[in-house]
Length: 627
Image (cartoon, rainbow, N blue to C red; front, side, top):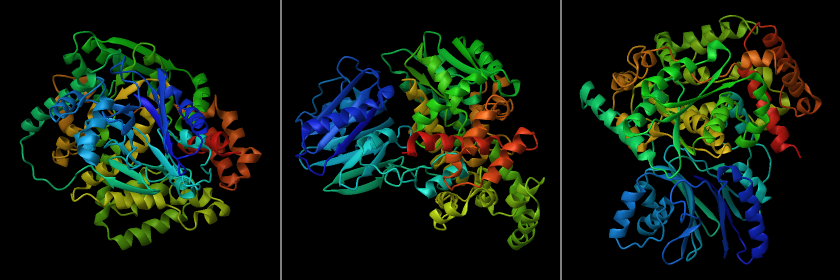
């Protein structure tokens, strides 16, 4: 596991020493991603660098790594789980290897297959390969988006890339002009979606895509996507269960390859318990497990984590988050680079730091909700789908005006508005923190002018994404939408940044692409059966995971920010959001922010998510955008 950085100079004869110094600075901004060593090459137009967290081939896996001729150089972030099988195939084709690392396997695969090398890789990755013969760069990102990759072409014509946005900012040629559509999308969803970047000058390479850069021209290509095309039920429920168990066990097995200590996050939920169950079957030693909890009972899942730990006889470790740890939010802001408002990042960071004292690699259960329809919002959406039986004109012309006529904070106002929408619009509104009505009150005219009529661009893009699957099943469309948006932009971003902040590698078996491709063939009615979420997954785990865990009410991985905002953070959040420099930015209406603060502190309404979103943005602004 590593972090990568680099740039291709328009002027390849630029002073080597200056470029080497610049590359060194870029690499050192992500030393947390790879504390063990640094590797760089500055040659011709290329400057490639990486920071390494040694996991596999500790002695000879240093990067950059070259092909036999020395014409191709690679820097790589991630793990390739099928590299040993792929290596044998490449050796049969005549390739000679100098190391035992998965990194070298990629460069030889590129030499053999070209851009199609990505089709042969099973794992998580973001890598860059430079060809010194034709002065071309090839960069690729894994199918689901487990590993990040930012890039930009500067005004001076140089191409810059890196694992984190701060790497590009260190280059010095990246404008900090804010993309207002990205900010609008952040306020809507609490994260900046993949198609946006908070700075206009930078882009993210989308999951399942690769990019080529040659002669100043950038070309991107999609090589993989979630496939929810309509497919008939081809197997019985029992057959699906049998194959699912096999696929799950294999996905875990191939992720246990490591030359350093390995463990697992254990929340006590279905997904993490399933991963620990498989690890326990495959390991001769007790699995090291790590859990986090809170003093507030409504957020504390430790009893279920303990139940799972006892059942699987793990070497279990726990950490209880106390309110004074909210001071670590400043560290979180720095690690995320872009505004990011998923408050569960805080316990993720703390459990990662705890785990790093014992292991270097952890397996996590992320991805199960998007794969098997685990979110309760899918149930809520299904219940509200009956509203579509009402004529559209009636919903639009009666329910919506009635909602708009109700005063701020009136009971039922948001429900009536949501009920007036069509299916996909309704779902997107339900996952939005600041929807259209709240933006009407929040946005100042100056912000509206900067948006140039593009308010809600992120929400409109979500509608386009949801329309892509060939399946007519509503759940398939929602699973696809969440897999393309919430999963990479929130869940995987959180896991990557918080584990890497602790120099800890996280592996995600449920997002093995071969497992995904099988699960997508399972009919949606076996994922969400009536109101039972993850139906087929739970059935496959019966007799393996305790029933008390499988069929308990879903709790989610949240933090008691509502209480914290009213007590420990009360003064700090108010001062931050209402201080002079925040108000003078011209984004938000001060009176509306005061209303949110007052209503929340008086316990009239729970505005914790809205306040957290606004607070995280202002802290980000102070850290990254203020000059």
